[in-house]
Length: 183
Image (cartoon, rainbow, N blue to C red):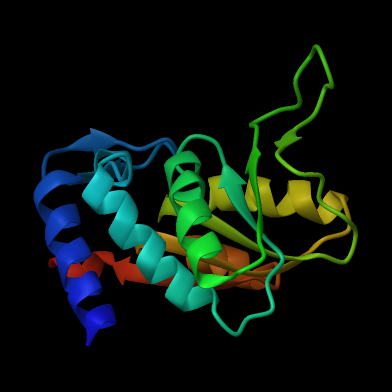
């Protein structure tokens, strides 16, 4: 019952705060009649709490060792997961993938506890359109020899991203789809 309440509460929050129904050009270059900015919810205390609850529910029993994603959409989601994963006894490493490796310091592309070859990893993001952000994160962790178990996104715009990832052997589990919001 709690999971259903969390999903409904998150859906209402996303619908009222993260969606703008207006013409917009997306990062993929496509035009759309709506814009989704998940950070408006994932960076709010209530939104972060609900997202962490739902994603931790989706991770239980998956034998996952690390969760992360491409900066910026994944950053607040990853940060929200830490306390809830700890509370539940989920032993997870959390990480953020930079769009490109740093040119100074450690010159890393992936920040956080070092990922190890063979680790089972889940990639998270706020939205998937063509899959570009998730694909970059998948490629970065695969280069380290990690196994990408699946990708979890808050909203699947249903515009080809899931299919692009499935062609790479990555299952996508959206919390919601655009259709859930009547889009």
